[in-house]
Image (cartoon, rainbow, N blue to C red; front, side, top):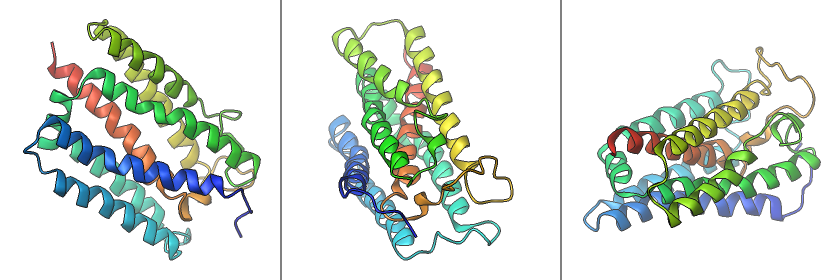
Length: 231
């Protein structure tokens, strides 16, 4: 059974997931009026609905099957994120979005980490996944806000600074993803304290890995692509 938590916690996850799902079609529409924003909308909202339905119906709670359904879903998310960034959509976004916009997008990780901390306080999430544990991703959110504002004021800031920030943000993202995986109720589990990391198999928390982590990962990949192709 999931512990009872204030209503605003699941509401936050649901609202943030919907907002992030709309970023791709919105960005494509802004960067190129002729882009297939409608197709991007169907893809984003379809993924949102598909993952939400899997969690709502309990299809992701099974950790006895090998591989468990949640592992397959996370693999699909990772592969899909890479393919999206390598696609013509990814090229368009990397070419036409500003560094200020791409970096500023990652600011969502600041309020997300604050709410994740509350999830840990209410024993919904393993404590090691919070910033009071082993998760330092809040640093990415804070620095994204500062760097995004700086880039908005001066688009010619040193590319080395953006490289360093993006490498740091990517490393911190991989850190929390690794902690989350090692907290799953699987044979390779390292963090054996309770609760196990099963909350992400429930609705709407499934959107933490499937939408929010995906958005952060895609954002970093697009910045890398823009850094490699811009002068």
